Figure 1: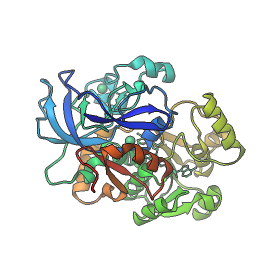
Figure 2: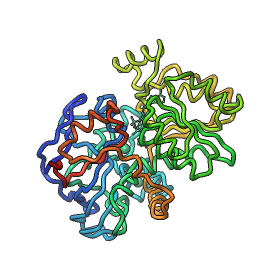
Figure 3: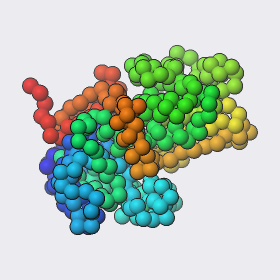
Figure 4: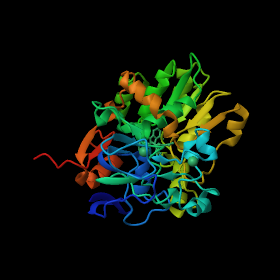
Length: 394
Ligand SMILES: NC(=O)c1ccc[n+]([C@@H]2O[C@H](COP(=O)([O-])OP(=O)(O)OC[C@H]3O[C@@H](n4cnc5c(N)ncnc54)[C@H](O)[C@@H]3O)[C@@H](O)[C@H]2O)c1
Ligand SMILES: [Zn+2]
Ligand SMILES: [Zn+2]
């Protein structure tokens, strides 16, 4: 079968690989009908997230048709349409029982790799390096899904893939980040990053009752999409974010600040130059200008919600400011399985339309070109959906 294989820094190729098989009784195999490229894939593409090996199959946002189920899977059968959560969860461990699916203790068969880096084993993830279990990903014609009786979400007939594909990751991510802002009536929330994750967070915040959401990015085309969803916008290349947000909130600062950018944020000046050198040398794994800015901007007693991925070490955080303001930090890897049923019902009621952010749809064979486009954010590229079953139109 064809699959998108990682071959090194900014080098992905569509190659012929062996088809997946059932290995464990709780596995299922899915024929992938749609799969997306995520900002998280860019951390692997840029080779700043550890644990990749040449030949690894990428992809943690996918859906399709079940073709085979393991003998212990009773909830699904061949022919069912399912969306696959990016985070893999066993459903029975201490954490899964509390709904903390992304902290699952049993889904990472390679715990020593993440223990060395993080000091504890993290959960398994589809297509996301040896740190999260070295599972083959879903940017492929077929994919094996572990714990198929717990994760995959069954999709009723008649709903197009595009409406539900993002239940695999970015929609529950945006929803969780918004919940972590603990929105109260009248709240103003600033969202850094109008990429796919920021877009999902903006829609979730408005649905959860935020009075105003202010989207911050440097790309006007992405800010336009945020504005259409109901956000106010600020282009960070046109002035100081801090001054703008203070002015916009009567001098107080936003009640909550949500970072939908993470470890590869654009910065400027000496601090950014130092971050880039340290990231290249590996002494600082993450570049945190957005996190620093959010701490500076949030009002006293406010909340900072981190969705953008941080992998390891960040330097020069203004902890004194955070401490003296009494800031609450909430963050984490998405708990897809905790939210996807609710979010599917919101989609079916037409209260959420995640498909609005799809800018490019292409056959799987175009993956290499689409990764380049998404990295450069060229051609108004906001979200790419790859179709393994399709060939390019003549
Ligand atoms: N927590 C989770 O479970 C989870 C899930 C999915 C994705 N993520 C992470 O969310 C982040 C965003 O993902 P995405 O798919 O939207 O990626 P993306 O790269 O398409 O979007 C990031 C956006 O941030 C903007 N940006 C960069 N620097 C900025 C700055 N200093 N100020 C304001 N905006 C800035 C970029 O212009 C871009 O529009 C990534 O780090 C990704 O790994 C986390
Ligand atoms: Zn993702
Ligand atoms: Zn578990």
